[in-house]
Length: 360
Ligand SMILES: *Cc1c(COP(=O)(O)O)cnc(C)c1O
Image (cartoon, rainbow, N blue to C red):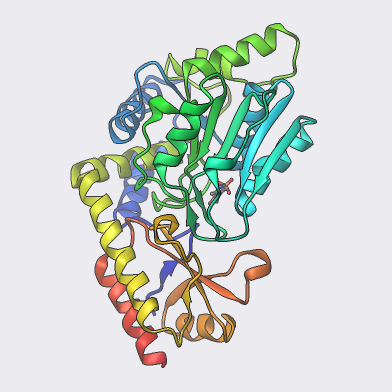
């Protein structure tokens, strides 16, 4: 039976990925040297396409990491001497915070109840915080911070750096990178690719901060510190042997998406999300949207509260090839999570919802 993965990552592969993998093998991509001209050209092309898709300012750097979790660690090391501040609205935001703690930083957090908005107006960020960390789309709870709220915080604290986790909202999220200093994602979510590569976008201000910390004798890490990564990135090179296959595949999928049109992808994502939210608002016997505030509902990771438990529903769905995510962590058996990425067509979503209807 053909399976379709609605899991929030890894997820359903983007429809062209299998073809790209075959082509990569034919072209011996996994064997080429990362010191070769072919590789440097590939990186240059990927940078160009990333800049196009995300409107990345020319003076911002693009770094490769092994994962989004690695990006969190690199950001803390390179942007924080003493203190960071974290908006914690779920497990991934908490991980960012814990990484700061583990690196012995003085990390402060504003915590929101799971699935509830932050009261941004009334939050005071301490004077000493050098970096504000925000998880824009919290994959564990299905809450998504409206982009304007992020801009407001950035404007309110112009002297602080701002880092934004956009792992599970790319490529849908339309974040103006001019307003933030670091943004990062890994490719096994919205890009529908195999895991094993992270992309970290860094402003000149964040790079300068890393240099300043380095000069002041802070430990900003070893081979993957911003100043060294930046020196390599301007030459389309990397320090270590990177995941060349993943770089190739990301570039190929980016080209597909650019060709298809990012605006079209964004509009379709909204329409598909609406289908899912409307369905579970009307058919509450299955469960209901966990995030109550419509403005804060994620359009890419839809979390449904299942009062009768998630286990039986997920098993029945899986019997018919629909692989849907369980709740995250302690919500494992109380919620289900449905990914709505560009890999999921409107027809896939309709088929899934029709199947839910039959379950009744
Ligand atoms: C999946 C996820 C991460 C972690 O990504 P890795 O590639 O596994 O390191 C971080 N933040 C968010 C919001 C995520 O959804």
